[in-house]
Image 1 (cartoon, rainbow, N blue to C red):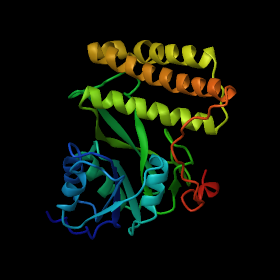
Image 2: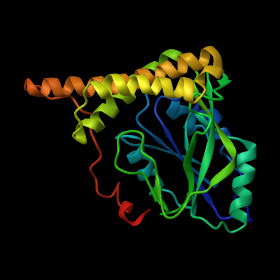
Image 3: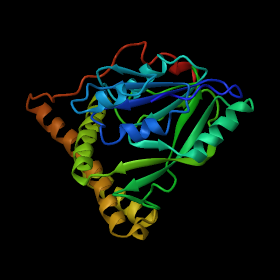
Length: 284
């Protein structure tokens, strides 16, 4: 499956894709990115067919690295790329033709900024979530080499950039929930990681965190951010987000209780390599 040749009208683009057990998603993701000049897939030792599928694509570089969180994985991956511009995707995301066209046109015309933000269109069980807090979902995913780094956080790390990162007009597609059971397991995993970050940051949650944050998450997404207009999907989706918030703070609360009893939590390993987090102090 050959990649397209680099366009002479724009600088080179390297795309980074991070994976773990993404056999259901990775082929469609890669197909949407074959127009890029370099594709680097960084896998966290998948146990399904992800490695086999990726390695069937000519010109796609496949490497494996221990997972210390999305921020660490993407910082490391960006340091391995060779072209002037970097595009970052997750395996459950797709680059739409309209977004590709906008990016190529932007880069062919000497862009003013060093980083750009991309909107995401979120799908839940095959249908777009139009509200529920996701109508304004956007992430910094296009940048020049060295113009951005993720901060040292296990989860929910927003990229810091050199200067502003204006919003592009076109969207990527994000197939966030294709299988309900898989997504619930992901929420549990992310809640554990979030609690681990809270432990590392010295947080001590009480009633306001466990109950208050969970209830507020549902009220905010379902009512204030109009999740009610997404029908049954909106109700289920907003309840899932609230459940994830409850689980994170409850896990951390339980760890603090056990700490007083002389029991330490089993935390995931963090990446404490200075190289992974280098350059953050130089960014806005």
